[in-house]
Image (cartoon, rainbow, N blue to C red):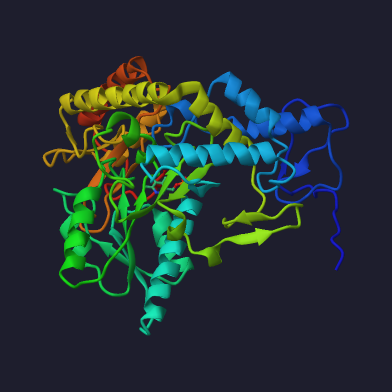
Length: 461
Ligand SMILES: *Cc1c(COP(=O)(O)O)cnc(C)c1O
């Protein structure tokens, strides 16, 4: 049936640029208009819509990069037309991707020598899917080779995992074994991990930097507990480290922390280039410890772009600009530059956490000393208002600080979370503390305006 585009009726919801050329008519909000408008008008219309979005640099809810140097922007602009998948047409973009994979593989202590195994993705979510799929395939191979049932795979992880792991389990038919967390350890512990593994466990996910409150999970302890499990005749369970944030933090500011391929049990690691990899949104990475950790059946060889190219990804076409930008951050900063940036964020985070604790009503759930991210709650004796009030009131100054409930096990604890990123200075932190102080004073005087069990506030990552 043909689609008939008609002029908007008198009652239809329409939009129009604030100032428009004569002859530019309003267009329907939810339908394609019969005809277009001048480029300037279209641009103004879209810009005006976006004006009400928050100021990204005051958005303390997100882990994602909100500031890059102008040179990086220009570089990305110049690459906007490059499709990452066309490796034959854009061989140098492919080469930059390969260099980034090698750089990360070395930073995460994979065996030196051979070409590193890994690829770029749209973000950690896709990277986690690929890491999880490799675990699932390898588990199934082992089961089938031993003549055992391979129909009921499970994945063990803390209840604090990022939603991408629940998606992985649902999309790929794997049982999600979420280990409840506690107030003392709001993340996966070694005992918790080992106790939930059985012969159908495809792997354990350890998070380097919990989304909920920023602390590192004890990867080495988890590996040791799984070593003991295997040594005692139990299942031999591999680990995938979700280093979405920490993969770009720990190598630079916690070099002595052993969490990566130095642990033989760690088979794969993901990280978000667009979080602490310091690149604008649209890039993640996954790296395997060695070629054997990535089953060959998962790698497709395509030749319809000219030249035979192996690909392992959920998407086909994808922007190439972020890859160029990631390589830019590596050559621009080097190891010492990354260390300085990440240490700077940690210094701001730990100082800010301490100042917030001094305000009085808040108790820290974490202190910014792992990821430069921390969560805090209201002390038990504060009853006149909730963290949702604080989140709502601080928004009046432009700050976006999410309030949400902690995961299963401590679901009755509601917290606020701050992600400190490059570009968030000590000076901005000082202004934020002053603003928080004023919000608290007002709430103590006038009480709550938001229901205590507010579920409106969404959880941003
Ligand atoms: C952000 C995050 C993800 C998802 O990463 P995207 O890059 O946003 O897709 C996965 N795991 C953890 C721990 C995260 O913090």
